[in-house]
Each structure stands twice: as structure tokens, then as C-alpha cells.
Image (cartoon, rainbow, N blue to C red; front, side, top):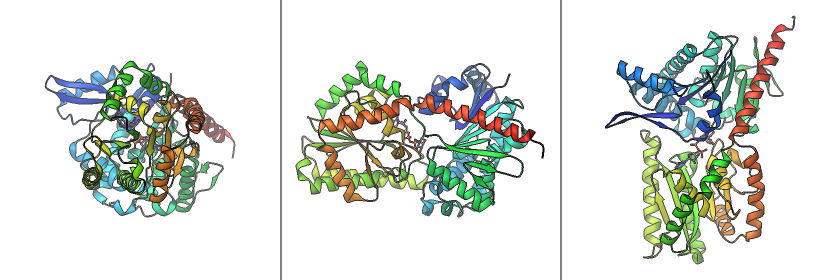
Length: 474
Ligand code: GDG
């Protein structure tokens, strides 16, 4: 029997150290839900880091045993590996480069070496779980070298790779000192997936210009194999968000929040703390809205949830300070005893509270500078049971390709954003429901389960094509 192995930097369960010993907390992320039916099936497994340092051998054994029961296999990483491979090369070199923030990119041979070594460690962990003909689906930018490492050890395996962040233009990629190794690493896969066609085109262009390989119709021919490349826009678990929004708990939260907000209209923004998300730019636009359209003072509040993330990286600390300062300044300038322009939360909320916020928001404000897809935009849509509400979406989020009924904006154009905020707040209800209905139909249909199925079936096809090629006599 062949098996399927999912590999990502993080496992879908986090191990925590509590007063009562080690605890296991399942993640509610979209990927975990979407891939649930695969990795939980008989014999399959998800390989990744459990999110905590476990050095003691007996503890490692305990964690491994516990996770095995839930179809997971941990890769234990040390503090220095996380510092260099994850915070270093992944988040200080690849993340800024792939999001067009090259001014933040650090080129450091030591973190690159750690990246290679940790990819190798993941490779060994996968090999320990897999046989020669198994299917392996590798996820994201932390593991770009893994497909090729696996290919060398398992020439017959079916290997898929999906990138969750943008793939940037050749001009960005060529600046990376390790560009050749990174591209070759990805090419170990039989199928490489991106969120959009433009990321896919950028990848093909880099492969052709940097490796000199022919690329025709989404197929790359290496001297020994052919690799398929395609776009698979990731979806969400639509029903889960629709159900959460309909729940008694969400309705109760909404009631409490509405009373506290004294009837103000609500603009909602939800992101991880990240300079790619355009959080500071969004605050400046909201400040300008209050300046240019004084009629909104006292009438509209921005609820801004920022989920702490990567706070060991210098740029993230600086961004946090910038946000704190901007919120302080705007609130100090405009607030009244009864009204706050910005309700800012630097923490994450449980699903029912998040659902209440999605439910009650008049405007969803999703304005990243760059974003692979952006699932928040889709979750906002799924939560709008009465179809009222307007989505303002950056044209530089992958989601903008699908959500053409959102109000699309250029996140660098503050004037346009201010005007669009105003337009959204005065949009007639009929137009709101029309746009929302179109977007709901799309987000409901292409959910995360459809995404998983499509990728897996294309992967099987790509492998079959590969086998046919191999049996054609020269
Ligand atoms: C990467 C790419 C791509 C947020 N606040 C709370 C909370 N969240 C959840 C949201 C959403 C998720 O976090 C964020 O997903 P995004 O897609 O918006 O962004 P990234 O984390 O940057 O993800 C991105 C994605 O991978 C998938 O391929 O779309 O472009 O950067 O699901 O709901 N969840 C809870 N409380 C919160 O306060 N429970």
C-alpha cells in the first residue's frame, strides 16, 4: 500500500509546556483542516516541528508516541536551528525577498547553511516514515530544498510542492546568492503549485532565465524529468466560518460588542503582525478619512486585530512600535468620551469572537502590500450570513484574482483608499448584497477541500505523465 506524507515547518498540533507537564494543542488553521482527511487516513502521516524545544530524550519519545496516535511525526529542532533556519534564512531572507521587501533581506552564509541542514533533517524524518513509492506533499518556503533532497533518495516517489506566499519576479529572485540551489531544490517535485497564475509565470521565468531550462505550457523539462507547474488558489473551510457566524455564541458576543460601541459603524482589520500586511499604511488612511470626511467622526470605528508574530525579528519589533504610536496618536487626536476611532487588539481571539467581529463589520479592510492569498478576506465573506458588508481588498493579495466583486485598491495609493473607505460606508444595501452573493458563491465552491482534491489529483496525473515519458523508447 502506498501512503501519503504531508510535510510542513509546523505540525498541525502545538506542544506546550504547562504546570501539569506537556500539553498538546491542535491548531485550527485552514491548512490543518483542509489536509485533515489526508493525513488522518490510515497509514498516512504529517511530518513537522511541534512548535516547542524538546531536548530531553525521554520527553522526545513521549511526544513522538503521543503524536503518532494522531498521525503526526515530530522533527525536533534546537533553539539555534530555529534562530538560523526559521527566524534567519526563512524569515529574514526568503520572506522579504518573496514579498518584494528586498531592503529587509539579509544575506548570511551561516543562516543559509542552517537552512540546508534543517531541510536535510526534515528529509531524514520523511524518509524514516516513507517507502519508495509513497506520495509526499511538501509545503512552503521553509522547505524549498526538500523536494530535491527527497528525489535523490526516492527517485520513484510522487512529490508535490505548494508555495503559500507569492513567487516574485525574476528581478527579485536573481538577487539571492543561493538562487540556483533554491530553484533546483523545488524542481525535485513532480508538481509545483502556486496560488495564482502570475506567481507561476514568475517561477517559470526564473527557471528559464537562471537555469536555462525549457518551459512550455506549465511544463519544465530537466535533463532527466519533467515537472508540472500550475495555479491552485487556496480556499477556506467555508462551512466552518458560516456555522461559527451563525452560532449562538457569536450572536451573544456581537450583542455585547455593539452595546459597547454605541452604534458606531465598524471597519474591521485582522492580520498577523507583518510589514507585508500594510497595517501602518491602513492606519494612516483611516486617519485621513477622519480628517477629510469629518462626518465620520464619532460614527465609525476601526477594529484592528493584530496577532503577535515573529517578535524575535527586528523589523517586526519596529513595526509593532510604529503601530502603537500611530494608534496612540490617532486616538488621542480624535477620541471622545463616548467614542474611540480605533479599537486595537494585539492578541488573537477565539473563533466565536472572531466570527462575531466578521458578522458585525460593515467593511472588511484587507490591504496588504503583498500577500500570497489572504484567507481573512475569504473568511469575512463566508461569515456574512445576511450578505451585508463590503470588502475592500488590495489588488496585491492573491485573493484579488478571484474576488473581483470586492472594492479593489492599490495599497500605495492612500487617496484612493480613503475615498474607497468612504464609498464602502455609503454603498447602497442592494449593491452590497449583490457583490457579496457573487463572492460567496465562489468562495463556497472553491473551498479548502476542493483545493486539496484538485492538487492531489493533478499530482497523480503529473506522476502518470512522468512514468509514460520514462517508458517511451529514445
Ligand atoms: C500565509 C500567507 C496565505 C487571524 N487572527 C486570528 C485568527 N487568524 C487566522 C485567520 C486566517 C489566518 O489566521 C491568517 O491567514 P492569512 O491567509 O490571512 O495570512 P498568513 O498567516 O500570512 O498566511 C497567505 C496563507 O498562508 C495560506 O496559504 O493566504 O497569503 O501569507 O485563517 O482566521 N484566528 C483566530 N483568532 C484570531 O485572532 N482564531
